[in-house]
Image 1 (cartoon, one colour):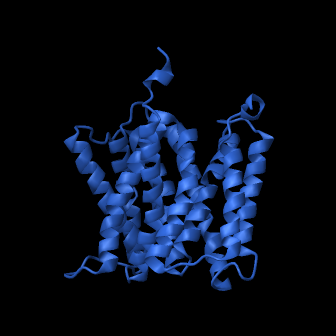
Image 2 (spheres, helix red, strand yellow):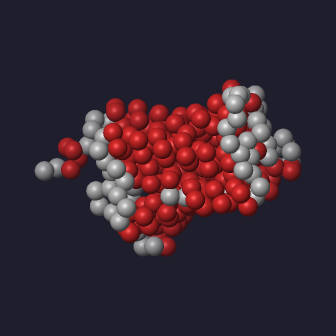
Length: 305
């Protein structure tokens, strides 16, 4: 049987891809609302994991697909949850909490497929190709356009925080490689998502206590608290769509979400915070998108054209 025939019509995956891009862009704006509203950085990440993890765990039980707890499954949950959720989202909370525009944060994430390709070459999951390496260099040039010009950012004090944010796409790339290598066969997306969020919670809880950032919901709900609650549902939806799209259409198709996320992140930043990005930051979208295009371009595509 032709495997292509098993794939859904392209309209449904494209719609899911658009929704995923919106959820990713919304994530950084909601993080800004929560941490700038007074929720400590690590407390935000911990409760975000609780909300998303419990949501997906309950759904996995309702659909009779509970997470399995074999050693292979636990290793997969722990590694992907730490590299793809705990560490990146702690950094996101710190970065946007120190004033980096959420639109710029979403642009930095566009480097994830480029770093994923580099990791895939290192682990011999992909063959080296000069055009994709060129895409990686072009993408990095886009980040240089964000941080180098004097007038690119609201304040030069934000440069170290943007450099710190580069760890986030590296974490996502690590997660993608780890999921390919470590994901047990036939692992359901709901159960995977539940384990992904729940596995790092003990470490996050201890880190929250050690950093003196312990925080619980109080009696009244303000904008920060509602942003945190909404973040849990948005994250649960986002990780489920990510896992399903990769399962249905493959990782190359999913990487095109990185064309959507920066645009939605910029729009949400304008709507939530009145962000106005500089000329240099907007121009940086060009090399970021061009580099991303070269990285996801299939081999032989140029010859076919």
